[in-house]
Amino acid sequence: MKIHKKLGRHLLVPVALGIGASVSGVALFSHGAGASTTSGSASSGSTNSVTYGGTAGSGNAPITYLKLDPSTIGLGKTLFVENCSSCHGDTAEGTSRAPNLQGLGAATIDFWVSTGRMPLADPTIQATSKPARFSRQQTLAIDAYVSSLAQGGPAIPIVNLGAASISAGEGLFSTNCAACHTITGVGDALADSIYAPSLYPATPTQIAEAIRTGPGNMPRFGTGNFSDQQVADITKYVQYLQHPNNAGGIGLGHVGPVTEGFVGILIGLGSLMIAGYWIGGRAH
Ligand code: HEC
Ligand code: HEC
Image (cartoon, rainbow, N blue to C red; front, top):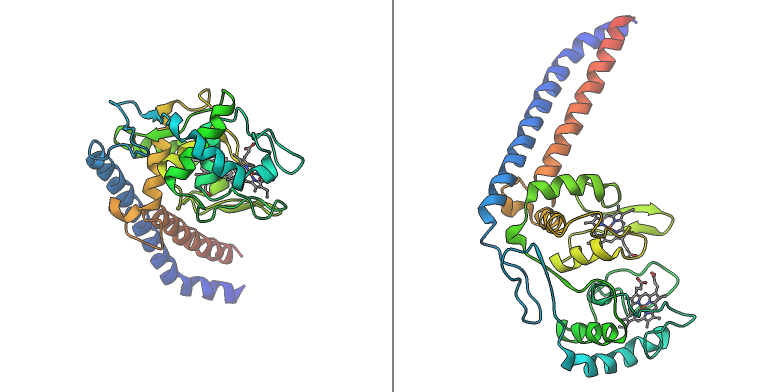
């Protein structure tokens, strides 16, 4: 116990340092959060919706839906028969190898093809995102063909980031997405061979598609869960996680203010542990 007492006194300096460091960690964090909010409002209004296929987001609607061009259905059918039919059947009706795609809606088809998950190479493991096989035009043609076969499902969302709020998105993200994708969006293993992927490569359209369609083991968040405004807010926050440096955070790795906060917590915890050890030592 004598040793502990001695140690205790020696630890006073590290403890003081630790507390100092954790205070500055907290300061860094609040600085980061402040920076994110300011830049959020500064950039809103200037960013307009990301558009594909020539349809612009109209007015102030947080999400508009892409109207697919019926004249591309023929091209889409050719591409589908060459690349998808062997598993999904000629009219996407499904086979013993792969599910029926009819009535899923353009957003689901678009998500799986544009993230490179389809066409699938190895049906025994979780489909992963990889470089897309098709150009944007070809992908939209496949979307047009499959969604022409049956009604139903969500259309392809175009997110109006200018009408979205990073801070509202941050709250929604931490309660609804972080448990699987982590608070920084880097992704994590969920169970044997199932993982929630990194969100860094996803485009705004793919983020909104994932939320609305719930690919694979991800839950689906319909209009009863989130309004279009909330989907746009989450999408804007994920974009912010992808490019924190643009929003004034100090780049530690890839995640800016969130890591700074985390580092603050780590240092804080470290000093708490030292303090606990020190107090424990004194109690004897
Ligand atoms: C080698 C066989 C194979 C090929 C080729 C293939 N798929 Fe698939 N596809 C699958 C399997 C198996 C699944 C189910 C995988 C899963 O849920 O992880 C699937 C799932 C999908 C889904 C998700 C369905 C759902 O219920 O959410 C879509 C959309 C899809 N495929 C579209 C396509 C398109 C479009 C092509 C062609 C560009 C294609 N696939 C080519 C085997 C294939
Ligand atoms: C229960 C766990 C879980 C929750 C909660 C969850 N996801 Fe996912 N998410 C997944 C899984 C698993 C996948 C991969 C699906 C697949 O490939 O089969 C995924 C895929 C994605 C992708 C596609 C990434 C890529 O590969 O390009 C995006 C974007 C995404 N999620 C965003 C979100 C957002 C935003 C939320 C919150 C609104 C959320 N997720 C909530 C598990 C989850």
